[in-house]
Image 1 (cartoon, rainbow, N blue to C red):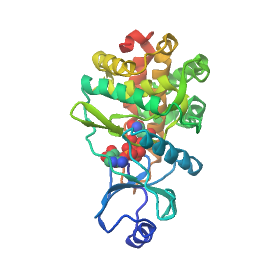
Image 2: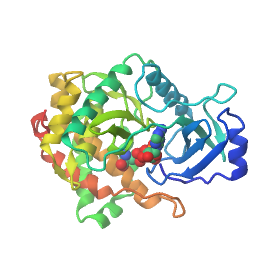
Image 3: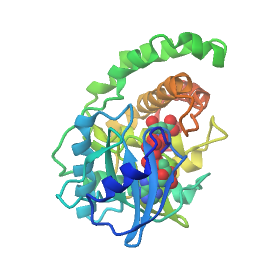
Length: 321
Ligand SMILES: Nc1ncnc2c1ncn2[C@@H]1O[C@H](COP(=O)(O)OP(=O)(O)OP(=O)(O)O)[C@@H](O)[C@H]1O
Ligand SMILES: N[C@@H](CCO)C(=O)O
């Protein structure tokens, strides 16, 4: 995560007095990520992450994210566990923002994942879907297709300034996705992570050891999570699809839950949609990020290039399924 909100010494001391976490030893802003403000907190009792929720997080969704992580943790799925204060509440306010403390997860995020890691990640994703199968809270995907025209409005000029002719291609993609009606697909649905990028997954060697950052989790088609992962794990140098990595990721997923034929058929449009979601949020961040925030905006063109790959894909075979 980035740091948009600075936490003063007094505010931190007052906040920590609500918990039973011992004496603070270290408190540092984390520059990685782009969505929320995140701090590393170490006390004499353990290591934690303190998150302050920023612009894209709707406060009314926060109990959903906390319950979801508790549900996963109760099933021994490796993910950060929310830490309750002395009053039993995990969610409170800091510097005027909703804030939570979660446990620190050990492991390394791969900079350039290999095919073995892709396979292990695919299996870890399917296990997550299985562990969430009886999670009964629902949250619509706030960054699904219905949100994209709003994100795109007024951005055509910025898109063209990044790459000549890009605005026209994006308009055509939005029309093609709308015509395919991905929201109405009759394929398995459930609770999905929706943002399981390499920087949100931890490994020990080639073995997936856990996932973080559930703040886009929602109710949607399960295969959309595979599409998000193919986009973020199986490309190299931005736009080159690595077939072996994609095939390994899908095979890993299917080692836990085999895909239905209808899910395979839907992969190209789901991959196009997932690339559109990340292109659009990155395009918005490219121009709207506050100049004084400790954050490195991510490059929207990486996803414009991935859109070009998905436009040409005709079947799941193009992804290695
Ligand atoms: N529970 C945790 N345990 C260990 N490290 C963590 C944890 N939560 C966050 N981090 C560290 O903070 C970084 C940023 O966190 P995170 O990915 O949640 O931020 P974000 O702003 O939501 O990012 P994104 O751009 O992926 O949406 C991670 O890459 C990781 O290094
Ligand atoms: N994982 C996203 C950020 C969260 O929306 C990206 O890389 O664009």
